[in-house]
Length: 63
Ligand SMILES: [Zn+2]
Ligand SMILES: [Zn+2]
Image (cartoon, rainbow, N blue to C red):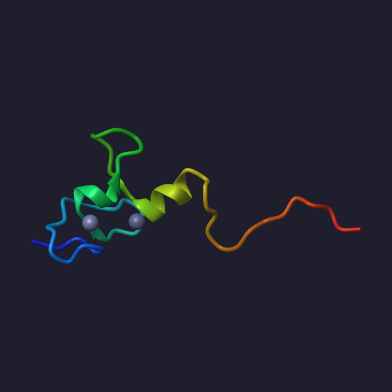
């Protein structure tokens, strides 16, 4: 049995659909419902658009 990546003493309950790592239930977010593969918290934030991977974009126009 795999252990949660963040909690080495907890058994992982599923894999993140994005990064594929093992996480326990506390670390997983079922964004699309319990029947869809979950995200880990960092990946859920990226998927929700809270954080963008690969740097930030500014809308401010340069003069
Ligand atoms: Zn992930
Ligand atoms: Zn965990």
